[in-house]
Structures are given as structure tokens and as C-alpha cells.
Image 1: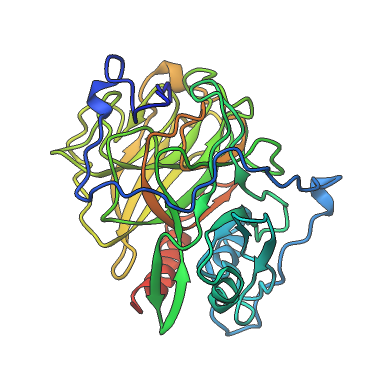
Image 2: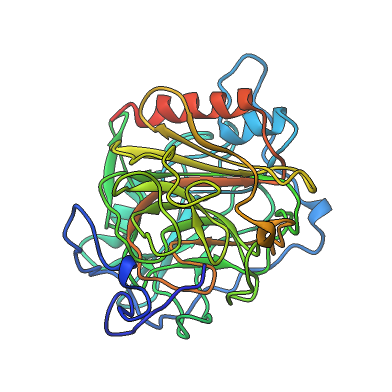
Length: 377
């Protein structure tokens, strides 16, 4: 979206008064955030075709979200979570933590393939010291890892890393940690592999906490500009959660799951879009899907991440000719807008992207898997 940032305040009120801070929870300082700490440079794949995702699970065993989408014909091209594996057979690292004091790092893996994060390793490594999340690893095999956001058009300094201890939750008796986004924190990968570009199809979702949000721009996860600049309508397609209203809104006062399509947070194809109602779940699954090239069709889905199935607040054409065709660039961002605006807050637990418009049956199976995990709290 076109966003505005002021280094001494959350949002530049003259330009973005409708996106001022508006949350049901007081904004807490991010004690573990590091400003200007060195980012990790990760090797990029030589050729995307040479990448190998985790193998499918054995016949008859439980499938995780990326297994479900692979079986549906649209495998994950990015899969990020500090909570759990998003493939039943994934046994690699989920994220990396960094000690603020000396810069030492440690990868945090899973308790077992397909399982929860081994958070005891984080706790033993960090102890009482301040630690940040320095890398959120991509589980898909595409090496679309997320590190702190580089400078962008709206905020011309890099993003900060999240406090690794900022949002502990307990699932199935295991303590795990989400990504605690506060103003100034953001993650990005501007050299993506395999993500949707142009008017091509994609499916993306994120699971977030429903009790932390604001009207700042923009608590997004998904497809963004590789330039970290506002490159115009249709150059983004990301999932948003919050109460920003300057570009568009749903019914009531929010929060809403909306699509950030650049220069517009859209709850539907008009604003206000009354069919997109406020979301009040403790944990929220928000999904945005863009259909195949030339179809001028996109979808928003919402669910309680702890139980039940998706509702579909919007399923229809793009908001205007400025978004048809789309001009997606394929970068992956978390916690900021496309141009590195980072006045938002929220708690992120997992998200993925495919390069296909998934079937409703696959979406429903994914939501059932999500509920089976987050319903254990």
C-alpha cells in the first residue's frame, strides 16, 4: 500500500489520520528489538527447479498444510512458522534466534519431523538475555527465508528484529513462540524463488492473534514489491489484519481480514464492503487468493483458527481496472507494507504461499488441520 512513516511516531497523522493507533491492547515496548543490527545474508538457490521440498507423508498419515496443497496441485512456494512444521515430514530449522548482547545465533528446530518447535532450545540459549528472531526459515525448499526488512520507500532504514520472547503460547502442552510485530519490526525477502508474479494465481494465509492489532500500516503477510517501494496498484497481494480504514474497510469498526493490493486495503471490491464483518476470534486464519491470469477474480476467507471452517467475506472481481491485470512482483514480506511502512502491530504464528488458486476442498482441509493444532490451547 501507499504508506506513511514518521520515525518519532507511529503514523504521520496529517497524511494518514484514519490509520492512527486503535487497539484493544496497550502498545507494549518491544524490549528485545534491535535497531540496526546486522542482517544475515543467506545463499540464494542457483535454479528453482533444483529445489526439493520435504517428501509427502506416508499413505494414511496426517497431512500438514503444505502436504494438502501439494496434493491439490499447488505446492507451497513459501512456508513460515516459528510454531510448527508445515509439512508432515519437515525436520529442519524453523527459525533462528540472536542474542542482542554478543550477536551469537542458534537455529531452533522441531521436536520431531512435522512437530512443534523445540522451544526449550531457545530458552536454554537465550536464558534471561535479550534475544531476537533473526531468520524465519522457509520450509518449502525454495529458500525463501525471511530476515529483517531492508530500507524502503516509506521507512528508509531497515526493519528491526522481533523480540524472540514476545509472544509465548502453549499448544498441546508445548510452549512455543510467535513473531511479535510492533512498530519498527518487519521481515522481507526481495529475491524470491517460485512465487507468483504478474497476474498469475496464488493462495496465501496467515494465522495471527486476534487480540493484538491497530490502525497502523500494515500488518501484512504475503506478496510484495521486490523494490521495497510503492510501485502502484496491483503490485502487491498480501493478507492484512487490523483496523486501518484510510484506503478501505469492512462493516463496523473492525478488525478485518483484508487484501493489501497496493494503494488499497480492500475488504471486497468496494468500500465499505459490508459483507466483510469484524473478526473477534482469539486466533484468526486469514486467507487471500488471486485467481489465474485473465480471470479478474480474487477471494478473501476467514476462520477461527481454533475451530470450525472458513467463511468467505468476499469472492468476486478486482476493485477496479487499476488492479486488472495484477502486476505482482513476488517478494515476501511480514509485518510491513510493500514500501516498508511499519507502523502496525500483531502476533504472527504461521503462514504460507502457493503459486496456484487452491480448491475449496483443499482450503477446508488446511483449516481443519490448523484448528486441530491451535485448538489444543
